[in-house]
Image (cartoon, rainbow, N blue to C red):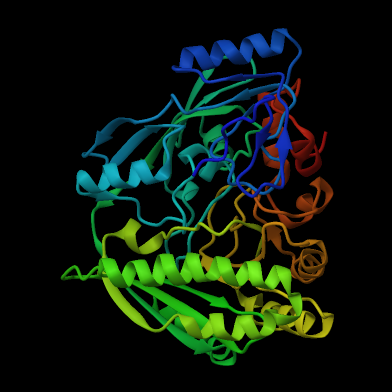
Length: 439
């Protein structure tokens, strides 16, 4: 699954296939000490440094022509503290390994995103999130982290130790240093009941506030060119466990959501005029179902159809208006959009560069099948999102820069001042970081 394997000539490519880089050298340190030494050596050689996880970002946030640090040897659980209910993991640990290891110990994260291929440091550094009324992004569940800074020193950060670094570095974009370990809050393993059902677009928008208020985790997918959505509500449950059966699960999650969907994408790419008809069929393919299982089996699902994505966070109260504008734009534009639009929410948090920093947020994600032209659609969508002071996901396609971010993030200056202090020589800079944070 990981696409971070290098090509023959040392070229690195991301999962979406839209970003590539040729680093001067690639390093896979087996310890924090080795990583710190690699950072010091890069500085001596005048090379920039970037760490990369599984390459699930669609931006060039991890691309470098300097030293690319691959964390695949920095994996595993360092320790579980049942008194404080925390787990400390090495930065390169994939979320799926963390989730299964925690489940074996009778523990779980409170909330998570909808895929679990990414490394814990890659996911948190870019602000990866799921959906939740009270429970926020993965980074908001961080209780401590370890960071190798530009001078090669190792900083331990928490609310008590280096608190100003902790406040910002939970979503640090790789601009403050290389994260080497993360301590997450965990809780006893619980059950979630998921209820998935189709619902008309107009009804979801009319009842959105109620659907949000009545469910711990509410999300929906809208199929452009149709008046249809598929909704999903996840709520804690006393049980019993009633997982999706293997045959039904294969049919709905693999055959329909990945197999048939893949074929539909190919068909749409071949004959764009047929996309509205395909969308109508796709939107009806998934029927209502209810199941109860442990969190990671409910929150996450396999995503085998490759795509490119843009996602913006808008103030939650602006969601319905923003979505109506998006629908009108698609209907009037002549665009043919074969991928559903995903809508999720998050409560306000206190992390400087979190897309939910200081405001209750709704996320609107637009996707295009990999290999189809996405610029016209994304440009038009971005115009709508930015009119509502939208904040783009740091790991997904967008065209915003530091000047824009200084307006939509109240604590932007706090982050850039910290960066000036921790990385005055810009060792951890690349083109993307320069654009979004300023030189």
